[in-house]
Length: 110
View 1 (cartoon, rainbow, N blue to C red):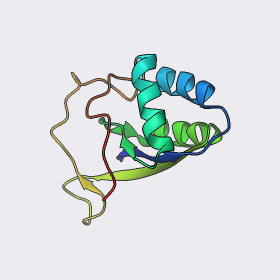
View 2: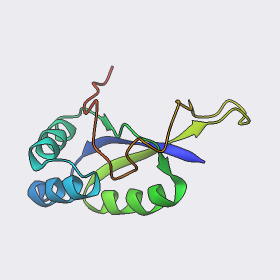
View 3: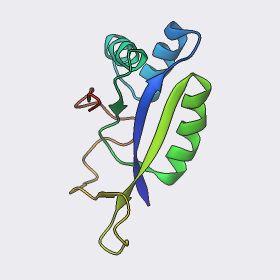
């Protein structure tokens, strides 16, 4: 099953390092990563726009947590699931993988 990664906040000790590593993990420009981490530190959650495999999320979640990110995995619901998680979007191999480009970088709470 796939999932989406939601990062609810950042409360680490070294924002520069967290920003650099986030930029590498999600393959985004350093300026984009800096804006994301700034918003996270101000309590604004961010969701990676693409689905992630369970294997990738099991590696990414503890790594991101070690950098001070509060990470949540949101399961993607397929047609044969029992109403858990989010509905699966039309997803093709042409979309970037976990390490692809970012869209819709910010979401606001509430």
